[in-house]
Image (tube, rainbow, N blue to C red):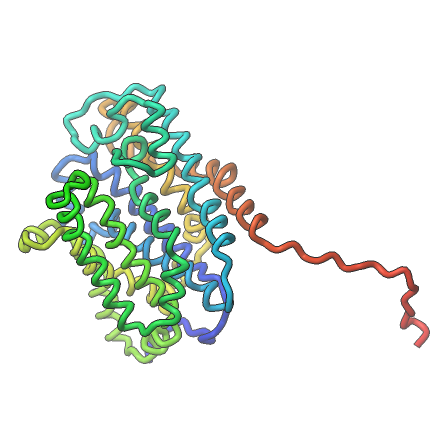
Length: 398
C-alpha cells in the first residue's frame, strides 16, 4: 500500500476543498488555452503536441467541470432523505446564473464601447464581431434561440449546458441513488451516443431546425452523461477510496501517467483524424476517464492533495468561477487595444495580472454576495426561543 494515500473515514461529512482547488487549476488552463489561440503556429504546435498540452487543456477542463458539478451536487442528496427542488434551483440560480449576468453585463459594455478590429485569426473574429443589439443581449440573458454563444465572451458556451442540466439534476441524483449503477452507466452512454443521430433526425429528416442548432441542443444529452458519471462517483466514493488504498506505488504511478495522457490527448486532433467516422465529441469519453481519475487522485493522493490544498491554489479555487467568467472579456479587450503593439510575452503577463486583479474584484462584488444571497434565501429561519418570565434558579448556592 503506497504511503502517499490520503485516507479518511469513509462516511465523513465534509467539504471537498481539494476539488474547489482542482476546479481553479482547470480554470487557469482555460485562461491559458484562450491565449494560445492568438499565439504563432510554431508555439501552438509545441503546446498541443507535447506534455505542455496540459497547460492549455481548455476543453478538457470543461469536461472536468461537468464531472465536478455532478459529484458535488449529489452530496446533499446523500445526507438528506428529502430534498427541496425550489431551494436547489434558487441556490443554483444565485450560484451560477446571477454571476453570469454580471459577467455578461461587463462583456456587453466592453463590446459596445471598445471598437473591435478585424483580424485574419478566425477565432478572434468569432467574438465581438456583431453589433450589440437588445435582441442579442436578451438571447444571452434567457439562453433562448440559436445564437452565437461566444459573441460576447468566448467562455459562455458551457454555461448554457450547465444551467440546462441543473434544471433536471435533482432527477439525475435521485436516479443515481436509487437505481443500479450499471443501468445508469448504460444510460449515460446511450444519451451521449444518441445526441448526434437525434440531431441528424431533427434537422435532416424532420426539418425542425438547422443542423447547427440541432447539434448545439442535443449536445446537452452528451454533457448530461458526464453529470451522471460524476454523480455515480459521489455515490461510490467509499468503494473507490478503498480501491485506491490497495494500489501499490508503481500502480499509482502508472495510473497517474495513463490518466494524464488520456486527459491531455484523448481528443487530440491527430487521434480524431484517424477515425473520421466517429463524431469528434465522442472522444470526450477518453478525456472523461482521465478527468475522473484526476478527481480520485485529488481526494486520495497525499502529494496531489497537499498541492491542491495549499493556500495559493485554494485561493485560486475559491475564485475559479469568477476567473472563468471574466477572463475572456479581459483577453479581447487587450487583443483589440494592445495586440501588435507589445510583445506577446508582455501581453501574456499583462493578461494574467489584469485577469487576476479583475477576478478578485468580481469575486468580492458579484460572486461572493450572490452565493451568500443563495444561502440566506434557502436557509430555514430558526425558531426564536421563547423567553420566560419566571426566574431561573441559580446553581451558585449549591
